[in-house]
Length: 183
Image (cartoon, rainbow, N blue to C red; front, side, top):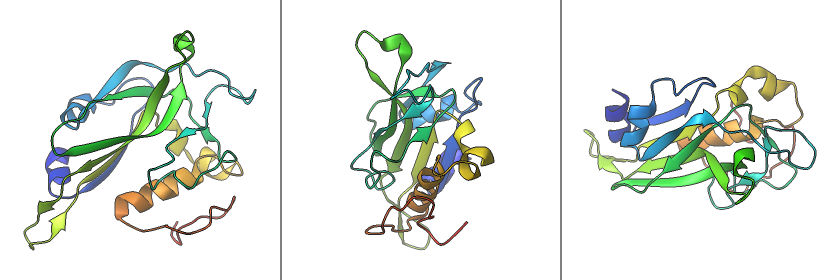
């Protein structure tokens, strides 16, 4: 049902649970994403503790306006390994260094944006399916969205805006202010 939803221009925000893939792995494979079996063991960054990352896409609408003051918090993310498949555009949004990969210091993708080529709807409108897949569901918990000054609130709002096709272009990225006038 979800695959058909995306093919028909639907939008989906999917965040994986900490202990397994939540049964979404076969569906993710159809979108060109392979989910890592083991959670990433993040390295400490700037002595702020494990689970923090500043490795954000500078080109994608969700994160392109973020600067170094915006720190993302992730608990036990799973790596998302993607391959280009026909009719799908996949872009890494958030990456995190994995402690197990210290020798080559390779960054692991933990959030990816997927866009399907536009298809003609029943109403003759071109519709583009969009998916945001995140390797960690914990960052969506209320304690990350309300108890800290920034946490992942702006990331979530921008992600929902992108999925919904709401433009935030040119709006200032100010700490503690939601950029879209919707809760």
